[in-house]
Length: 385
Ligand SMILES: C[S@@+](CC[C@H](N)C(=O)[O-])C[C@H]1O[C@@H](n2cnc3c(N)ncnc32)[C@H](O)[C@@H]1O
Image (cartoon, rainbow, N blue to C red; front, side, top):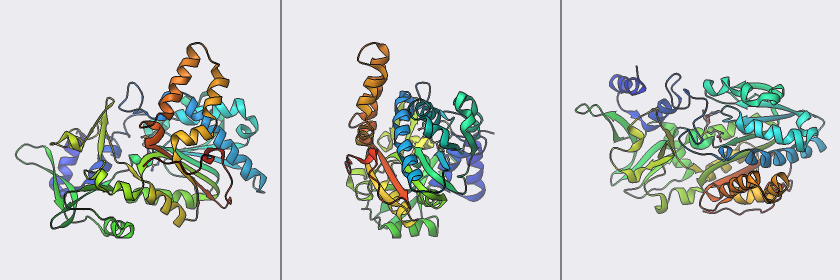
């Protein structure tokens, strides 16, 4: 049975699905979901690019930040263990880049860490040991769930944007949720508006004071709040570093994003609300990414509610510059030759304003670590709206 048929049957049996339930099946159905079926979805042969696809530079820069976090914890703790937890670890490429840099630049950090990879996709988990190669000996655990107690650092690149969003629409008659139904005449999926699907959705909207004007659409991701709270509560002591694209709530739920931010990626082509009817996310479930921009205010509030302190929220550009990105490129590859050119192009893509450099934000939280001046936060609050 295809995923399309599975979803159709569910709708016929139980009625229209809230968009979030549809997206959850499209992305994470245990056998047929977009992420479930493949060990990797990004890169030249994939559907979209992440910073990890630009080569080892991103991981090397993260390694320097994570190494600094290790030193800070070590200097103030009797517990010498350092758990390095990557969530949304995919096939382990970013962890491999982090470990490779640490092994060369900071062997004491490398020796001290235990690596834990958290990834929902079994196909991706199955390839992690091979991807890690000589660093597989550092892998203490790999699973779909966060280790129960973490003393160290949890980090994730582009996790929260991959969680299933609820879609909302404000009408003249009030707030409605978007459901997915089957048009019996054509057999195609169609959107229908209905009441809010759960008390959880209602509580999220009330708690966040999200006010939309008639005609606007928006997405909310209660799972993102739950994930952040859970990550912070898993931290006995240490840091949480999240990198993702998004906006503060005041921007996300404003006229600027009146059509919402839902989008699909397929073969490097983005399709969104501007693509009209049928909406791209209904065309081929399981064959493309479905994503929405992250509510940064929600992330920060959830982390703080769970007991963390916000240490910085800044554009990826300033985060990586704070970590010495330009000097590192010169040091690694010099000024001339093909490797130098490649590395500079990677750096440019990581920093470019309007691209990864400003759409992506680094959000850094600490639990029971005070307010250390981290290198990645040395540019302080430099966030493009
Ligand atoms: C957009 S991809 C990013 C992958 C990688 N971090 C990168 O930057 O290339 C999102 C990944 O998050 C994983 N994922 C989604 N929800 C998750 C969860 N709750 N815990 C761990 N991984 C999750 C998906 O399976 C997918 O591999």
